[in-house]
Image 1: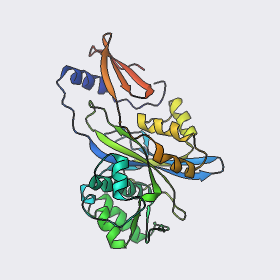
Image 2 (image 1 turned 120 degrees about the vertical axis):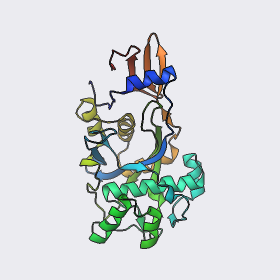
Image 3 (image 1 turned 180 degrees about the vertical axis):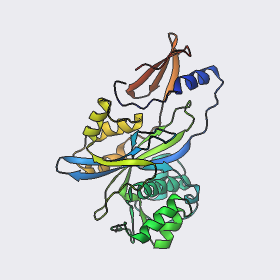
Image 4 (image 1 turned 45 degrees about the vertical axis):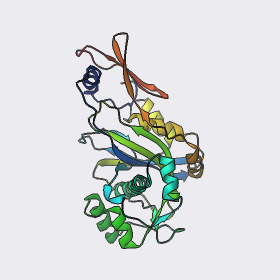
Length: 292
């Protein structure tokens, strides 16, 4: 492996099956992930977690806090601050109900996996330290899906601070992958008074790391990552502060990035539009392996 690109060993066979028409793609589930930033003396750092090696999907890979949309968050009218649901619907390219559920997923997963909550008692406030036993009990209930995020906000009288999020990019898992997600990537800054912790049962390590340092680790083959993770890290290196990254978010293109596989000169070429570094050449014969 020349770099740390996550590449499942079963992909070549699944790509061939898709090309042959014997594989029916599964419908991707909507998901959200958050690139949580904080400023340091040497520039912004991003919060990343390493997925446990035992995880069925991308085990051992570094990623951001994130997960699937909870349908219970799409029809409950939560207290909301920042851009309207209609604005978010237009920004994300979905209807208002789905927009609320996606933004809720971003905030919920950040709380579930990093212990950071982008919500407050009023539209201009954010909660402080969330490491107390009562907060932990609610967080555990959210993880277990015993409590929906909308119910959690209601119970605590909290307003979801959608203004603290910026939609950054959107990636859809390739059609030949068994577990598919339509993932919206957001950027946010660590609220003052809050701190991250490894609250995820899916991760065995968490780090605050400069995007450039993480990208260099990937390039050396030391840090395993999926294409959207390393792609977004490279994008973040352009910003000197978390605030500047957030300010850039509204102008970013949210056209979905979806890998394609095509037959060229007897081999399957796997590519991600706009991201040439991830191109793979897969032999059409089942005996071959993937080559970089």
